[in-house]
Length: 248
Ligand SMILES: [Zn+2]
Picture 1 (cartoon, rainbow, N blue to C red):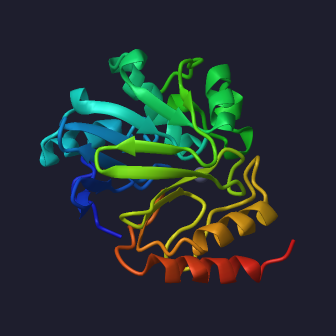
Picture 2 (tube, helix red, strand yellow; picture 1 turned 120 degrees about the horizontal axis):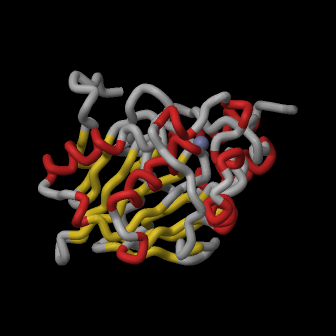
């Protein structure tokens, strides 16, 4: 984990050419990943953080020569507030019709409803207001399903439906670069996502992690913790062994 000396700015690190990691802020935020299309200068953002952290993200993208006008696509890995509230902040300044926003069917359902209770479950005891975000119904999002691919620049992202941490969790896998974006399904060092939030399911999470452990990923870009830059499959296999030892 990097120590952030300037909490108004996100720490940014290059993972491979045209892929950058923007570290989460300490409180209920998530890592954000930027894929750059070299030919157009546009970028795709994977996950949007908690809304409050967006100003830190905007400052940091200047370090890699981008600004928010270059934003072309957004992919949401799952429906939890630390990954999606930033979407509302982005849409305050950007026209939804100018963006391709990819979400799983279940996430689409929640965002369409704009129901704050679904987005910020009572159990968490926190509302969108805390992050300066106003929830509203969102339409014209693009649903992605198991087996489909999202192409952006030199990246081809296979979409895998991987429930268990949440109902609408998807994982993105770039086969040629062997890079995995699992959201909060699996984390480095043998850890894995919680399954006790609404929509979580331990058995489904086990099966999802088993699938991911078979992919031979080299690089792991999870929703939390620092990315793994080599031999990621070994760490995911360890996550599978750890979760397999759990029972209800
Ligand atoms: Zn989550």
